[in-house]
Amino acid sequence: MISVDIAGTRFNLRAGAIIEHEGKVLLHRLICDDFWTLPGGRVEPDEEAPKTVEREMLEELGETIHCGEMVMLIENFFTTGGKRNHELGLYFQAHLATDSALLGRATPFVIEDGGSRLEFDWFSREQLSELRILPQPMKNMLISEDRSLRHVINRE
Image 1: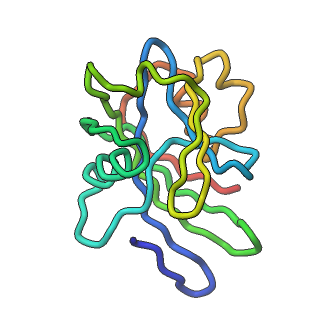
Image 2: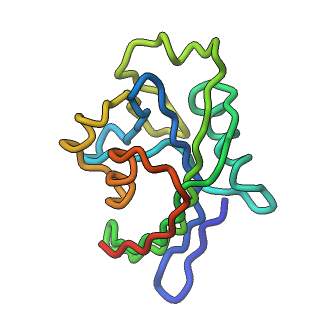
Image 3: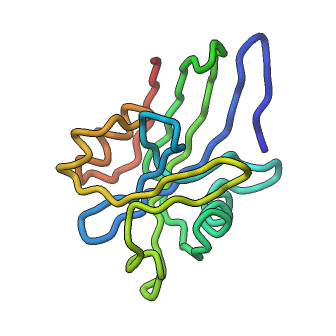
């Protein structure tokens, strides 16, 4: 995965999926976290970001998805566990198959991924306003219906 430490800062290249169905968006979080984010993961060397999204959804959810257009690029600067991070997040509109098992699956649900427990759930636009979603600019975009490409710099 593309994650390197440079000059005291960890740099990550991440790709995420915006999966929407019947007015709701799919979010996930580590069980121990107090915030939600879009499902996705780190890009592997020589891997195109849309392929990362498709790979991650297959690995985590057993779902084959179609990764569509990129709708947000976030340069995200934050500190976690005392470590400075610079994350470049590429976020894509993604589409489930019409016969996806995920559409009928009861939520919330928990999966195991590399030793971590991830909780997934569907949220309406109204519910999103009450959640802590990171990075923060993603929350505003998800609440709106505007899916035009935008570039955001976020410092937390």
